[in-house]
Length: 296
Image (cartoon, rainbow, N blue to C red):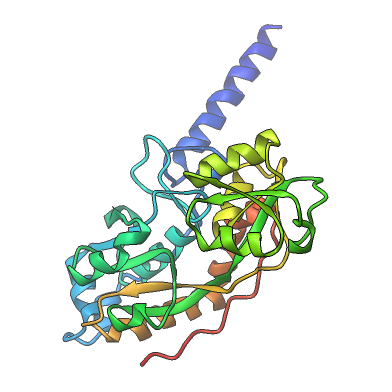
């Protein structure tokens, strides 16, 4: 009996040491894991001294705007300094190509309505925050990519009769009040339920008071990744959104740097590895990385 206790204690201590010795955020939950990204130790020597990349590489830090409240994409767990998610990994890849490790990144919470403002005022160097590419945005800020393509989709309880948008006629579907997503499903014949936030909508799906919620497919995959046993994202996208990286328009050289970094991440398998570790936890298959837009 004594030997059994000793062996058990020894196993627990060994496991604790193993976890403590691993590089990470300090949270051992699967959702808090981050993929390993190699840092380029000679980054500064690879850039022209007149470029923005050289300035950032020699400064030893970079300010990147991400979401702090979007599971699977950009979320900052309680008690942690570093956010996690697919967007965050893309940001970490950019920093790594500048020779900047994750712990040297200055993370700036960047809500949707302030993304252009933060770039224009120089409050961030990049924005990686489910930032869809558009001609209107490109008039005021730089955008490179896309690194992910999604669109409006449906989140349902697993086993739901709803498998696609054609199944929502007469069904209760919720979305944030005033969103275009709400109008889109209303046009498809759904009985729409307008709510104050996506979390309100999610709770209604979980308690069964609505049949589905609708919104950005990337965000919905993030919610499904939080609860993959109960939730699933279904149907083809109703719209087309192309996530890109924002940068200050006065530094056009950053566009090719971003695209080269994204292409390298795809070739090295980092892109797919990140998707599987984040949005892929929803059960979604890893898609093919999208073709990049040419830089102006």
